[in-house]
Amino acid sequence: MVASDQKIRMLQGTVLNVEKTGENKKDAEGNIWEKCIFSLELTGFSKRTPKEVLPPDLKGKKVKLVRWCCFEWHYKTGIRKTLEPDESEAILKGKPSDTVYW
Image (tube, rainbow, N blue to C red; front, side, top):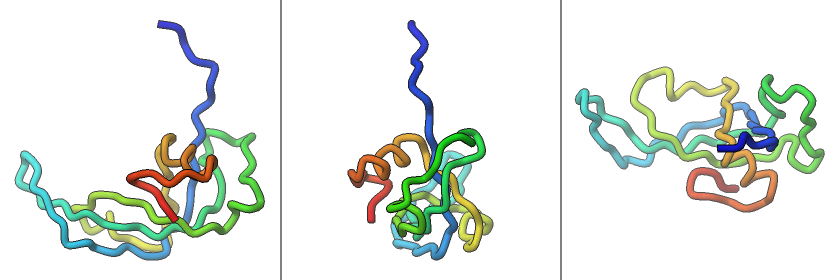
């Protein structure tokens, strides 16, 4: 397998709100997970990509992020949240996905 020269970019944002959807599932350990919609305000890229600069039209953009939450700390607001590489690329390309939209 050949290694890719493509860099992985991960956006970050500040969590403004966490909305519980009421959709639940139970894992193998018996924990109940609830599907949540996070409202984020984009702030930049993660520390792993220090040379990346957020395009001006995306700075402060508000996006929705779908996540499964179980523990109290999953619901915190005002914290920094890092998006997955595929979610970041969807935003950068202006194409919503199943887990990130605006």
